[in-house]
Length: 548
Image 1 (cartoon, one colour):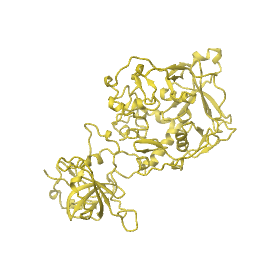
Image 2 (cartoon, one colour):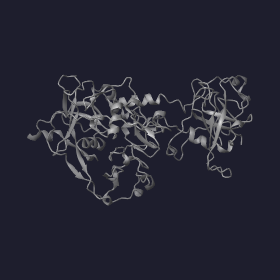
Image 3 (cartoon, one colour):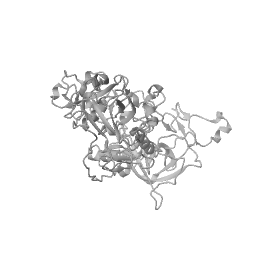
Image 4 (spheres, helix red, strand yellow):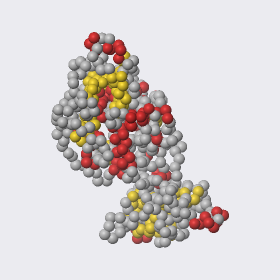
């Protein structure tokens, strides 16, 4: 086998920066569509809020319209018309409690979540759940906040998480159960100004019956508040809250760094009220919310459905731009979890120590971190992925090298020799014992190749796995007959348009597999999003190729 340029265009799509999502989170040909009914008991509230009455609201912004095609950050009108949101799994990962079906994130069934090693969660319905993923799967299905807090004290008499927004000042106040740590039941705290943004304010407003979330997230001096007799009894402690935007309440966000407020500022939220006409809106979110143009492509989910971050030519401020056109927060870079489909945000090139403060709470915080639970779920799912990874540690020795390098000839233009079992998805398509084409093993009993390489006569073809030398098998080589040949129905042999075909391999007798398990064979990842491939993108291509 040799690696380098080869004439088959389809190989570019197969091997270039493959997605690292688990097969459990990919499009499924026969997805489970069962529905479950989970009764929801009334939410048991915490101690009374700072003041009673509705949260402060403002109408949506009314600035001068600005076409998206004139903005240097926001993407094209064609992209915006597709109405991408956080549920568009052609561009972003689904969270572990959802799976990608036909390009949309859909709620999983709770039992499909990882159980081992997960922290238990108390629900607002007084039930204990096995994991954060499980309670989020139920919230996903019911569209209601269900999580209270991590822990095991979940009875009717045990306190539950709650939040409130002062109707005059907009100050956000939380009650966080302590799960038996102090015996006091929990504590009331404010939210520190650090990292407070519209994504978090959205959660506060949604919990307080404003379905479109917040119009703005602000800060106010704690000292200026407590000098007012009406607010003299405000809590003197605050916590930092970090939300992604997919949550349904602040309880589901990352809460950490409990501290005395001192001279700090505390968070406020002004809730959104949709009363503005579409013509007076700078950017209309997919969910109909109106935001300012400068709130788009900044890595913050201001819309609440992430539609303001999905179609971006570049990112504002210090947000990180994924190749799919999505902007993610800079604090997500180097946090140990892929946010871009191709993992670009976790590559060493973009990972620095500047954001180490975003990691500390995961190990040193008194509260269990939803982010660490999400990371554990993602790692579990991705550990099942064996495709698209070249074998660079257990490849066979090259015995031919002992005869001297002068006898080796590069058979691929510009290529370098691969090791005998390095490119484990590369197959050889043999027609009547003649090898003229290569292909890529894509899993189960399927091989992808070029339409010009095959014809609708399965008995004429065999597929050779783990073949290194074109003219000789090695001890890891498997030869499998072809059961069916499926050529693209719009393949044009004159222009090579739609030059793609599938080979279905014959299964072994009385089994569901087409070859005995072979450590020298693994499938390539088929990337689900063409938007991963941008201009100047580099890739690796394998094959036997030609010298001219």
